[in-house]
Length: 86
Image (tube, rainbow, N blue to C red; front, top):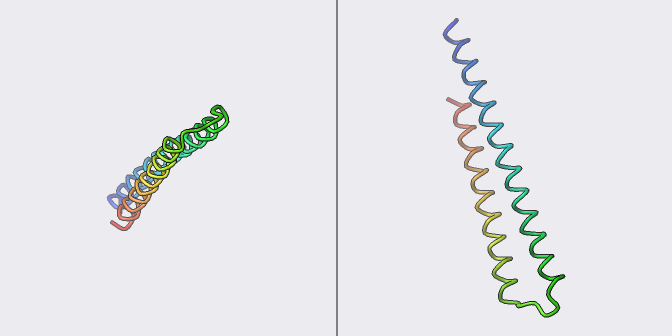
């Protein structure tokens, strides 16, 4: 009984730590997304004749960064779910 209680407490601590890591990563992702968004809108405002090739590249990179971030978050969620099941 004591062993199970100890294991449960350890799992709870592990889950709490992982949730904190996810929260930090989500904040970083949101910050990065807003920076990319602001950079894109700033570039449009500051240049009278924007280079459409650069804008397209920036937007594509921003979408790729967001996609990678989302995949990373999904992977973390999957790891947490597996840890809880174990």
